[in-house]
Length: 131
Picture: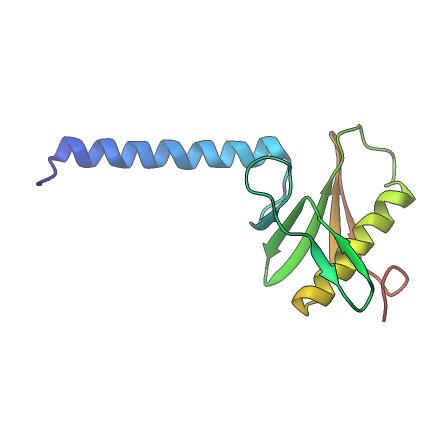
């Protein structure tokens, strides 16, 4: 089947529209830039939990982003953000950083906590994780 110029144009316009829609969805989600490689949002495919035999720990971060060659765990909270992240949320994020390090063999430099109205990058320091 030969494609007419009109058909090619329609396919290109549809592709551009879908790309704009995907970008708008990312902005609406509040996720920072990066490729989403893991998603556990309760919608769609259910991801397997990350599991560390060594630490006897398992968990499901909301997202894992691939940014600049690194895996970054993201925890999403539905409430409004405090002035600084809650300690319990920091510890939860630290556990996800530990799981990423153990499962993928790559230590994340930080994790992200996204509240409804703000975002915090939390450094994964030696105080938060094993050295």
